[in-house]
Image (cartoon, rainbow, N blue to C red; front, side, top):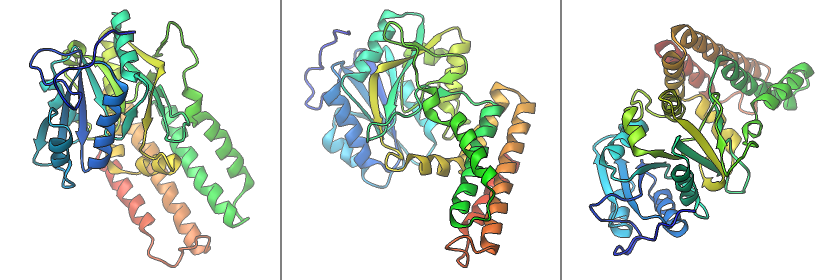
Amino acid sequence: MTSFAPSVGSRDGCSAAADAVPVSVILVSFNTAGLLDQAIRAWVENTRVPMQLIVVDNASTDGSVEMLRSNWPAAEVIQNPLNVGFARACNQGIAAARGRYVLLLNSDTLVQDRAVDKMIDLLERNPALGAVGCQLVYPDGRSQASPCPLRNLWTLALRYAGDLIHWLQRARAKAERMPRVACRLGATISSHTNPARYLATRAADGMVVLRPDEFISGACYLVRRTIIGEIGGLDEHFFMYLEDAESTWRIRAAGNRVAFSPQATATHLVGGNSPTSYRRRSMTEPETVYSTVYYFRKTKGIIHSLMAKVILISYALGKLAISAVCRVASLSERAHAPDKRLVRWLALIRACVRA
């Protein structure tokens, strides 16, 4: 294990020295004052390595900056006048980093039991590694996808088809008119898109080297500063979502290995109480559409990006059709209320066309 000592001379555990430190921790905040405070506190309590703490605030209005000045005065705060997105904010933090390693940490992620020390130790012992991820868990201890599967057209189609058929299953629970075959097909697709399928079981020497079809989650992402600099940081065309998959792709393309530490764990709070509904909600956001299409265009080419658009538009049309049928057949308890879902699917189609 790494033998770094705790930082000295700073009451909050954050190194304020001008010299280089082992790791620069970068958190991006947008109205997450409470979560941000928890994330920093978890770091201080569960990490022995001195750090440079950098927080990039995307025009928060919830007192995030004031909280940092009060609770963590050694933190270096970069204030943006507007929300510039996750990738660009991370790049601002990377530009200010002095550490040998850069940790991109979500404000809703709580590191546990010296997780980052273990990740740094892997990089120290394996010079061929460019970046390391950790095991993410929900607050109740259930595992999240770690590492995550890289997107291709097959997994994209399965993911959205599984969600579409999940709707049919819910509708059938309220009316026997829905065909049983839809439920069976949904169960089959879910078995192929379940995150548990991608959990690492290939540990050797305390790590799992990622396959070409996997990436590490940006919720807790440790990378060598020299390497993140060589690849040009995160791609700022991603406002949010998939910037971690694309940067993992570039790190690997530059000749570096990417690994995952099963022993290093962190609690990822987003969607922790209802992870499935959170995942499905994020699937329909315009930012997800833009990022997905751009990701395919950059990593696979224009043909794949067009086919990704077809998948996404088909998904939205399917949701529109199901919503309309449910309203007409009075299968929904809100059949006579203004249907915001119809507006959402139309907005999703517009986003697909514009992406």
